[in-house]
Image 1 (tube, rainbow, N blue to C red):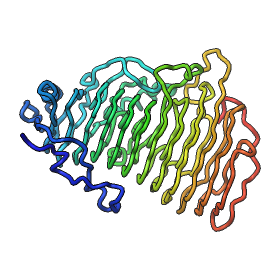
Image 2: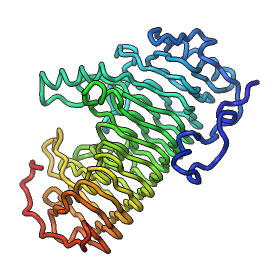
Image 3: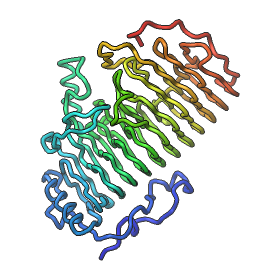
Length: 442
């Protein structure tokens, strides 16, 4: 019996004790010893063109039937459509291993699945885990969504119909972890996803560690990768995200749920709560933390010791006029700024909203704290809700920053308090709130 690669490839060192220069070389030892099942032994071919979905799935099925083990993707480029993990099976990508997503959308089966706050028939991800305990996915290899073809199809459709929705053009996610417990995902590079990179739905006890999530092809080809969220935490609890680098073309870490005027009655959408984000670096994207575009209750969220090195916003709270929302107990503590984004963006989110003939529901934001922030960034940002929104207890504390645009745009008096805030070398004073804007405007 071969020892598990989780044990032999790395040492069981706690990553939070490592200097940043060593983080990329380490992955935590997460799995017990188990038999290795190389996908080559099941007919997989690393020529970057052969479709290996059947061979990889056969390795997974065989390992599960034998009581479990580690399915190993060795060095080389293996093209695949959707694969589905099973009980007792861990997925490991060796150094130099690439699981390359097929560009044929038919290689990703369409099933009833969770997407954008509801269920509908939608394409499955490249790697899927559904209703499992003890999920392990990791290694120094790479998941490559090969997403350029899907991005081009989306932008062609948007050219034909400027009002087309995100779901009008089918695009696969890279990883979909659905209703799982005891989840560990570590060490991988995720790149060029056709849609969201890592989607967690109704998961509990999750550790995501030492991932690098990027879109290198957008720079090479000068094309925008639409809806390429880094990590989507959808109605999940007890999730830790640490030592990750994320630079994408949409939300970096999004906390999601349902949307619509009846969203608070959705039995499939418990609160997002008990989320810890630490020692991460965020490049470009929508935000270190983004609540929305679909979300109802998000609470007890902490981000600490993070770096903002691109154009992403530190905290984004999207306030949908058609959805009852409550964002509470969100703390960002210890941020180093070295880019051109915003500190905060709390604002109405009007994309495709629909009251369905019902009265507009209420939204609340309270106990939001951003503290211990230093460095140079683009702008302070905005705090402004829809008419009737209750925004309170938003605190900035121990801030010493240089900003290219130093005004914090306020939409309501009394929503923000400052404690020891220095901007461009001077104690910051809030300017009077702006006049409220009519509903339906941003």
